Amino acid sequence: LRRTSLGEFLVDELNRLENFQVVRFFNFRNIFDIEIKDNTLLSISSLFMDIDLVIEVAHPAVIRRFVNIILDNCDLFIGSPTCLSDADLLESIRSTAFTKKRRVLVPAGAIWGGNDIQKMADQGTLMALTITITKHPSSFKLESPLKELNETAKQKSEEPTVLYEGPVRNLCPLAPNNVNTMAGGAIAAHNLGFDGVIARLVSDPKMLDWHIVEVEAVGPDGFNVITTRKNPAKPGAVTGKLTYHSFLASIKESTYKPIGLHIC
Image 1: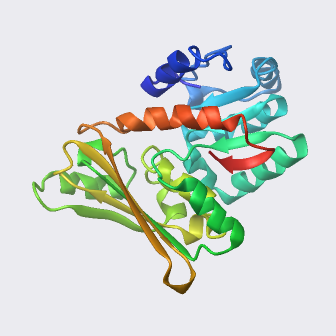
Image 2: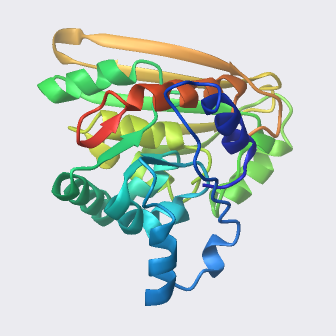
């Protein structure tokens, strides 16, 4: 869903694979202008009837508006999981996936060790998870008040600015395009969830070549793991280069996932 550079990359790569066939490309560019009426629902629903998996790489609004129609017909890969910070929407998706026997997949994206985090959450041994994302100021697309904080950060040449530190849930509406990694982390760390996983968003003018994601997981008896991922990215790039390939790998892995909501 949506002809972005990531969407076009995925179409090209998936068409090269024997086990995948891209049947249809939806470009809901005017997603906010679509008026949902009964005849519109019927028309949109018919587009998904011959599809096994819808891959969303557009905007969180796509999921909010069309998730029920999609899950009526097929499985769903959510590339904009910040929408899942809405507790009612998340519970509705989990319930619908179970009732309709659908698979809903969330990519690990830039979070390193997502499956290990999920295993700890499954066992109830994950006690804390902190995810720190550091980017150049021009790589952020933010809502107020973070937008104004980031504008101030652009004026600094050396000093990084912490734009936000707190629960992932409160950050997602303020940076819906920049913190999908954190939302994925909250899904993996399901025993902590969006309120328990801590997010740190850092704007750093010195980040001219990288996006950096640091993940710290804490378990019992002093258990602690810290990973640092440096993803090549120039100023202004919202998504780092290697995240494209991470998305592709997640889509491949999704074929092995059972019914329900899963990170992959």
